[in-house]
Length: 92
Image (tube, rainbow, N blue to C red; front, side):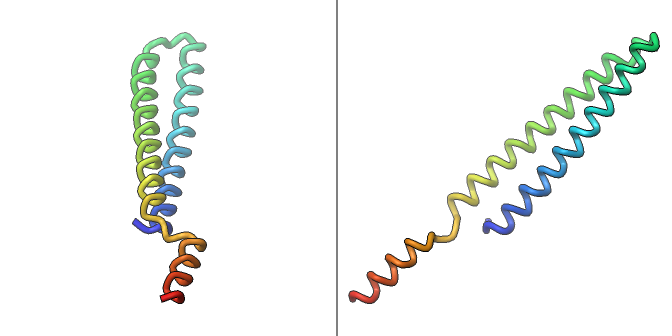
C-alpha cells in the first residue's frame, strides 16, 4: 500500500472513531437521563451497546496501527537513500 492510500484509510478510520465516540457520549447522556428520571430498564442494554462501540473503536485502532506499520515498511526511499544510489551509480 502506498503512503497516500494508507493516509486515506487512516483518515477514514479516525472519522469513524470520532463518530462512534459521539454516539457513545449520546448513549451515556440518554441512559443517565433515563436513570435519573426513575427508569432503570435501559441501563444494561446501554452498557452492552457501549461495550460493543468500545470494541469497534479498539478494532479500528488496531486497523490504524496495522496500516501505519505497512505504510512505514513499504515507504518510498528517503532522499538520503536516493543521493547514495546516485553517488554509487556515478562512481561506476
